[in-house]
Length: 339
Image (cartoon, rainbow, N blue to C red; front, side, top):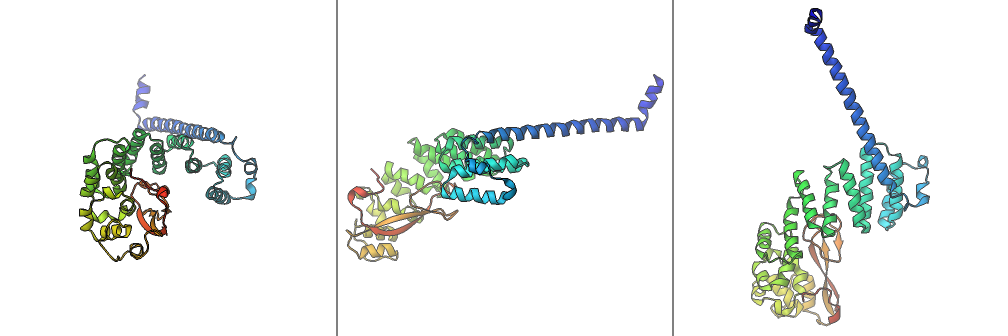
């Protein structure tokens, strides 16, 4: 017993025991990491297998030796742009079989989710992004798509939960105000004070807020809207019924005076520095009218409809409004109604 205690007190013996323990811990850590990685890969593979039934057989049977991964991705992108989503899905499913890197497989999974999102299959897209986030919960792009999916499904509480995760990662600061305003507008809550407080701090969501206020309380809308934001709502003013127009406010603004003179609601100006207004002021009102295009100031994409969140880059922000001369529509062809 005494000999054992002497050996135990020997520094070399202690170092040996320490090294053995380090080896055991390292071995089990390595084994556990390998096991979890394999389990993750198997789960992603099983998830991809769900989509093989709908995949195009011609694409699935392409021999990968003849084409590089980059070529496959370019082909998938081409199919996606042309609207042939089934073939794009088939390529991503096919590539996932030969991809060994977990991060790359996760990227393919996100691409698959994006295609379903773009095609309008929101439930399928939601399922894919949730699966992706199981393995990479700090993926900002996947979280953003999931938040927008919940928004489009009108599941705003879940969208706010995802937003909380984005905020933890330093993202989505402005989204919080957007969802506050959206909740009031969509649920017709009597909370104009909160809407106006949001607008006071930032005009990013001016369209969402004032489209609602001009329908609900035009008098308050005219009172609270700042003159610097008039051009952002040109289409709203143009299509506003005459009885909802506050001429006292209009007369104080050169831009609004020109707009409503061109519209024919009043004759406050005979000319305008805005080309489209000037043309209408000098034309027969029965043959010409204004139409509008909407430009995302983030990604510069142009759309024929207004939005509070860009359909392309998904940024929650009011668009820039561009004026266009067009042929006069009949009364039954008006595109926007404020009834």
